[in-house]
Length: 127
Image 1 (cartoon, helix red, strand yellow):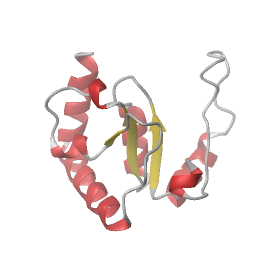
Image 2: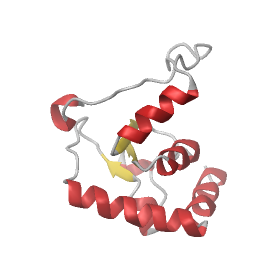
Image 3: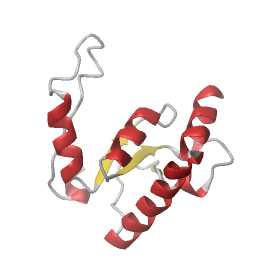
Image 4: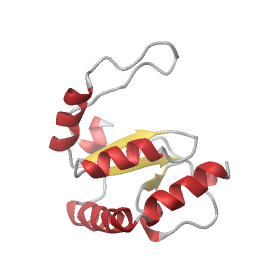
């Protein structure tokens, strides 16, 4: 991703190919990374990870889940749509800073009202 997104802090929490291997960094270190980040990006084929979303927003960075378009539920709110970037090619360019800021504002507003958590729970329950 660094070719498209440029260098930045990167942390892989555990190893997906070794399920028993857990995160190596203590929570305080992860918190420092998130506070210094503008975005937190992860790729996955499962539903949107509500824990990552909430943790990211609480630290002031925009969570972005990259997935294939076919994996998304048919109807999503604008706030949840702002959390997702679809990619069927294997490469994805970052949005410009103004788009990132407007996405974070939209997501943070929905988070403040509780609407975001409710929708993420509904999406997770319907998988």
